[in-house]
Image (cartoon, rainbow, N blue to C red; front, top):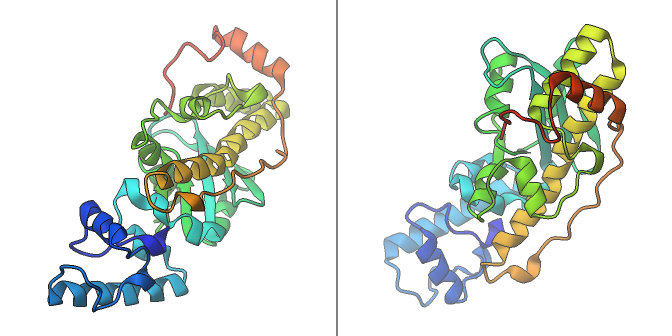
Length: 287
């Protein structure tokens, strides 16, 4: 879809791009300086120059070029072109604020392999893996995951970043990751009643009681979040594509991988009882 996009060119908005498509300019290759459309010579020169520049950035795999020129709710357009350089990311923490709280686990999924990192075990190895990717996909990562990571590790993640919270909201799906998944037909199975607050309780059970099963349940939850982002990304992309002339290029939804951990339902029931929680929890949830 990025090669059908003109929004990243200065002075081109949604209406002008729509005019291009309606006039038969469906891709960068279709635009020629003498195309019969009412544009000033200066505008034609600007568009031609930016399209040539765009082709070079596609060739070099520079997703940031397009991310810096598209609005947050339009970043879905870069996905297919950079899918093989994309990673899906989710973190769990001891609290909702960066100050005074810590990252406990991080899960990454690149569409093929799952990577997970645990505080006081291998959390520092996360930085070696994340730098391999051009695009990061999160849910609410612009407000939470990425700032938290940058603060705790003292780094700047400069990759292109597709925050599905904004993309899905533009499609009418709001209320947090789990609610969006439910609305879009994604079933979490045994993990459906867990949320960010419960992840904190699992971490404390692991740290205070040495309960490895609690850690495995936390990792199962964290990894499920990351893995589901690929399905959500594809669904969101296809829904967006439906409103363009390119709806026939919809992507096939991915097959979910086998998770390395599962939820220990006895531990979940015990912690829920000790905390006085009902199913889905009686507390505020992280979006």
